[in-house]
Length: 78
Image: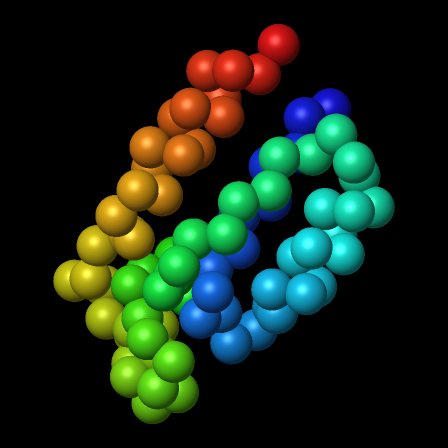
């Protein structure tokens, strides 16, 4: 089964290292790191309070480029 691991660089819940370890456990997985994306898939910097504020703001869009990456993965799965 194809596995796509998407990690945000500002994720407060799952570290970049954890995502890399997960990817290493399934060498044929696809792993991408999206800069300045947090756990709820939104744009965020490293300021914890600003990051947490994105969790409760439904007006914020998904991080730019995320949807394109997902669509590309789906189209390339065989």
